[in-house]
Every structure is written in structure tokens, then in C-alpha cells.
Length: 274
Length: 265
Ligand SMILES: Nc1ncnc2c1ncn2[C@@H]1O[C@H](COP(=O)(O)OP(=O)(O)OP(=O)(O)O)[C@@H](O)[C@H]1O
Ligand SMILES: [Mg+2]
Image (cartoon, rainbow over all chains, first blue to last red):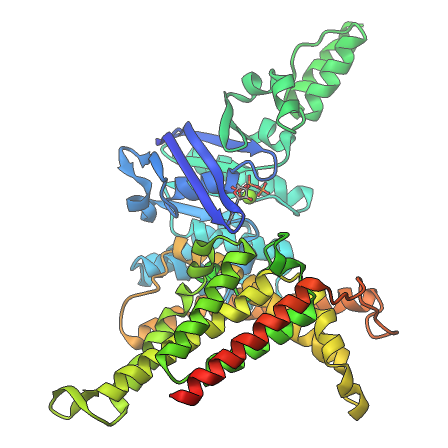
């Protein structure tokens, strides 16, 4: 479990200090996918940096199983926003190998890792020997993600992994997360998103940030039930919930559907009961 | 950290320095740099330092922010200082075998370091208090006489201000890439020289790609807005006001003062 207790962080800028996080208490649990949501500048990326141990809190602490995350960086894989800009090697294969090699993995184990991560991200063999700069935007994103997965991190943090991808790649990114968790229930996975639908469909738990503070924490059902809070944080509710609300205002109460599947089932039931 | 670089950054504000005509500031920075580079004694150098400090205070930009901007240059300064320290002959202060430090070496090294610091401070203050567009327009206006000899003054001005403007952007980009590679276990500040050089490849290659991408985008954006298809007029009319007059007067007095100090030295 990654635990934030009263963690604060600020940046110095010429116009004064910017308090990016103020006294955050939150948990990222093992065996769960957590989504971090919040308006632009609410501190989501800073939250991820602290969780990854790439920055240390000024006050409070951020710990992984009781140790500061900064000392646990080997266990933590981070897919940054637009990770395709970190590709550098001659071939995709070499780029994927960069992370594991930094941790001293070589030989057959290394090949194993490359094969594993290429498979899971759907990069086929012909792509592996090409230059990463010849790939399409989506393929680059997948190659960069493969480079992180090849380190077999116990904790996987992703900052807006689906931004700017087509629907099928989005779907693929999130199904990879679920697949990883299914094969290793000990993993901690968290992602940042601006899409309420992605948060509703793919996360087990939500952290809602507002101006550097945790405004809500809970399951998608619990958090999205607080509609006013979401609006006041400059966010929206997922489309299925809007449909359910709209139907209720017309006199058809189908309950609080949040995910695509739930609204589908509810509407189907409603139609069949007519 | 690279991100601390202040050259090329603009901090919005409304101080007297912000309100100066960009041409006045450009000339001021030029004169100040020339003055600093020609200072040869500690007395004149401390006068130059006082002038920089005064300008920094007037700008109302936090002093800590300006000083932090010098941090990325510390290795470069240290390097030049060390070279000077050991390579100038004169009255020996300390020696170990063939290596010696002279009195002249110490003062030359110290002067060089100060010269460099004040030079960077002067240029930083120029860009910190002048929006990029104003800088371009001011430069173009100052370079206009060059048109008489068929030099593309406006383009030169644009090139200079784009260069300045992009220094901080690339510093930010470099830092972002470094962070990403660190998360993949890359180790920057340790190991032998060769392994260190090799360890910066994962940063330099993406950085170069990003530079070319940005240049491409920028040229497209400029094309799309018809850059070079007509005469560019400055966005704001230049106005040489009372503040500018005071500033010029102060600069002249400052230069005269320095000249007198230098003369009697
Ligand atoms: N390097 C920096 N220097 C100064 N201020 C910064 C820096 N990075 C972030 N900030 C500020 O800290 C606050 C939180 O930033 P952060 O990047 O964590 O937001 P975010 O929620 O990820 O936003 P977005 O959705 O746009 O990615 C913002 O107000 C931002 O302006
Ligand atoms: Mg962000």
C-alpha cells in the first residue's frame, strides 16, 4: 500500500510559491486500480511524482509498505504523460531493454522481459527491430509503455495514459492494466485521467483532487454520487449517470448507473418491463 | 537544476524596469555588458555589482529566484576559475611541485567569475522584464539602420528573440526527459567519464528530436500567420518617456563613474 499522510509539496516560481499539494491523506491499495481525477492544475501529476518517489514531500510522508517511496523507486514503474518523447534507442527492442538493463538484467532474462512486454502491449516482432521514430503516435506510446512494463514493476503509475489515443488503443491500455492486476493481485496501479467515463469504467477507487487537497476518496459509485462536489471542482459526471439522471427527471428511476455496462443493463431492463 | 535557468524567461510585472521602452533596456543591457567586460579592478566591479543589485530590486522579481538562475552555471564558472587560478604567472602565494597559485591568478579568477555572473544577471534581467514580442520589436527597431546595407534586420531580430525565448523551454524539456529516464533506472551523476557521456544519450537524443519538432511547428505556425509576407509593425508604439530618460541618465553617469575609476587605476 502506498500511503500519503499529510503530504505537502510546493513549487517555487518567480511569482511566489505554488502550493501544489497541501496535507494530502490518501491510499493506493494493492490489488486495486485507482484513478486520480481533478481539474487542470489540481496537483494530479505532482501526486504521481510523490507516489513514484521522484519528488519528496516537504511536510508529511509518502510511504510504500512503511518505507519512503523515494527509497523504493526500483519497484515503481511510471508512464509519464506523452511517454513517446522519452524514446531514444536505435530500435524499439533496445529502447524496451533500457530500463531492465539499468537494473542489471541481461541475457535470456532480458530477452524474456522484452518478449513479455511486447506481447502484452501488442507490439509484434517486425516492429521491435524498427527505429522507434518510424512508428505511429499510438505505436510509440505502446513502445514507451512496454519499456516500463519490461521492468516488471510492482507498482505502476500512469499519467494520462490514454490522452490522444483512438478508442481501441484506449481500451487496450486499460485492459492491459486489468490484465496485469489479474495476473498479480499484489500490484498497485494508479492512473490520472480527465475522462470521467474512463474513471468510472476502469477504476476500483477514485481520488478527487481540488486545488491540491483531496476533495473525495472512495469507489466510483460513492464519488460520483456527489454530483454537486464534482461540479464545484470543475468536473463533470460520467455520461451514463447523466442518462440515468435524465431518465429519472422524466419519471423513470433506473438507479445510479455509472459504467457503460450498468447503463446498458438498466436501460435494457427498463425497456423490457414496458 | 536546469529548470532554474532565468535567461530567456519573462516574469510579468509592472515595475519601473518592466515599463521601460524595450529599446532602452536593450541598449542598457548592451552598455552594461560592455562595462562589466571592461572592468579590471575590484572597485569598478563592485560598482557594477551594485548596479545589478539595484536593477534586480527595482524589478520586484524575487531575489532568490534571480540568484537561483545562476546555479546551473556554477560548474562552468568553477571551470574557468580553476583554469585561471593555475595558469597565470606572478607572485606565488602557494605551490606544490610544479603547480602554483599566484596572487595575480587569484584576482584574475575572481574578476572573471564576477564578470561572468554580472553579465548573466544583466541579460537575465533584460528578458525577465521584457515580453518576447516587445524584445523582438525593440531589436528590430534598433537594427533598422542595417537595412541600409541590405541586411534583414527584422529577421535577425526575430532569430535572436526566438533563441532567447527557447532557452528556458529546452531546459524544461531536458529536465522532463531526465525525470522520465531516471524513472527507468538511468543514473546521471556517477561513474567514469565514458559512462557519464553514455548516460546522457538517453536525454540528448529525445531533446534533439524535440528541438527539431518544435522548430518545425514554429515555422509552420509563423507561415500560417503570413510571417515574411509583408511589413511587420510593432504591436505597441514605442514611447521614450520620462522613465527612459532617467534610466539613460543613470546609465551615462554609471559609465562615466566606471571610466573614472578605471582611469585612476
Ligand atoms: N515546475 C513547476 N513550477 C512551478 N509550478 C508548477 C510546476 N509544476 C506544476 N506547477 C504548479 O503546481 C500545480 C499543480 O500542478 P500539476 O502538474 O500537479 O497539475 P495537474 O493536476 O497534473 O494538471 P494537468 O491536468 O494540467 O496535468 C499547478 O498550479 C501548477 O501550475
Ligand atoms: Mg498533469
